[in-house]
Length: 488
Image (cartoon, rainbow, N blue to C red; front, top):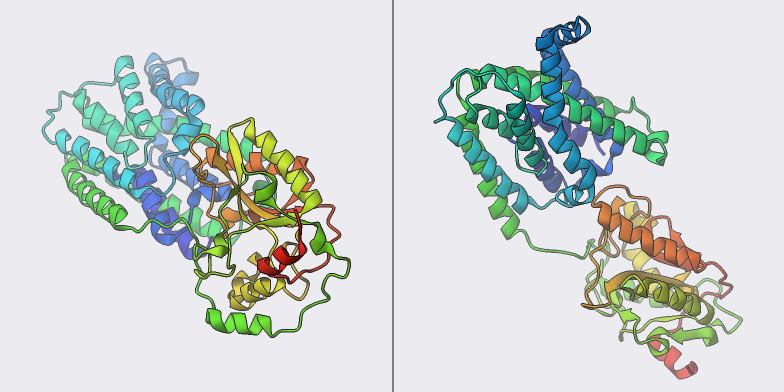
């Protein structure tokens, strides 16, 4: 994460956590525009939530000190306040514990969903304008109802402060008390989430190796803290003066804009780059370049056509079409060849996955050396770690590497994974912790199954597996040449 991304996301977190315009919704929109994911960075998420909690404590420090002092002195009013805050946290706690995976599935950059929820937030704020205040205090029943409103705000685009303050106003509670209760009650789930994230992250490499004083983290923390203090104080004044309707108009505008933008955004499940040279030039360079030392032990005779040995292996050979990262066709036919010993282990993995309702879809297997050379020459320098160095040759060139995903055995459709195939981003890393938990689990299932069958996953690509016992040499045969020399 760059420092300017941390600054923008920190300010958005601080402002929108308290203003009734949905922090989760705006972070989803910001992440969509910046093409980044706040959720992928556990440390950053923890830090901005700590900053948010500190801003509440700072603004309401007198009230919090009074409550703590009253509890220790066994004063019934302060004890009741604490109990009401605990009661209000029950609904969101239940949903967070029982439906964690389902909740995470909403945070995928779906700005149509975000826009729709912002329209609901707009309606809630709009109707508060017509609600007459009776000046009631919060009862235990009120606390529970407001707690359900807070649980509803788990959806990205539903403002937590907007939903809870609106609920309190509809219950005829004093507006100033409604705002104060809304901000105090959020401390319990914030610290609850922080504790769970910290405990869960203690064993992760990201938390263990994190440098908390790095520039992006410091900027993100401070921007969330100071913008949060400003927004918290501003919100007290806004509610008191009954100006929530202005935010209703804002949420309406942003909601409609998000929906329209989401509907017009072209769907793209393939990651693309702009090659640094024309494809024709790359082909000419690769076919006329000196090769490394090629196979001298007849490894090509050990290659088998995977589709012929098991028809349930699905082929989606991307380089036989233009549906790949360079938008160009590299193979003349959709074929998948693999070392015979590696192929048998692949079939074993396929049969294990079949028991869980999945089949293996093959994106690429054996790859002639000249294609690897084309990838290398066409990829920008900053992205070369995603492609193999032709000077050393690729494991694909040896017939011992395979790129795969999963498909549903019933529908026959490819499973939507944590990233697209050949996506040159951190989402492609096998240890990437962002995105949806359900997709991470499917990725991890694929990796663990392949590892049990003597394959190792490449450190930058969850789909790329190398057979561990490979002793083949580098090959540069086209598929057509292999057909003339291999018998299955």
